[in-house]
Image 1 (cartoon, one colour):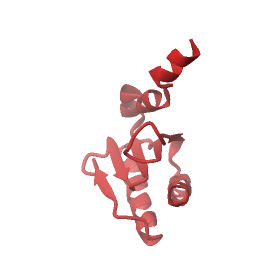
Image 2 (cartoon, rainbow, N blue to C red):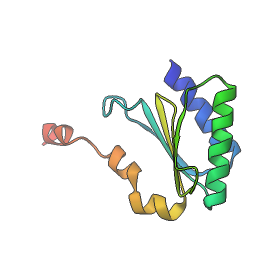
Image 3 (spheres, one colour):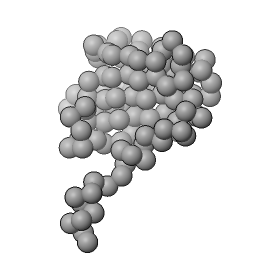
Image 4 (cartoon, rainbow, N blue to C red):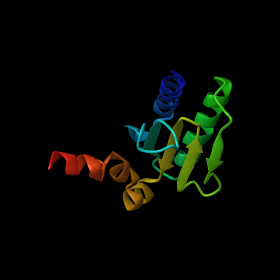
Length: 116
């Protein structure tokens, strides 16, 4: 499965870059955006930029692409869309403010109602 290979490549690159608090969220069936969302942090704008640059280079070298990248000039929040895997790289303060992993990890309302 391509998304599994992409996810493995993303996680390996983030680990090499010393990204912090990395989580992978399975969004299959929750969104048509992709199969997985990865949320991680860098210690500073500079670290966020370095993580993003390293990930982009690694994915291109492995033949994954085309990649869509947003947020690189400021490096508060960089989004890298790999197709089936979407990666969010945040500074810790920005990640805490938006808390997107909580939103995507929440159980769908229909599942909550079915259990009630």
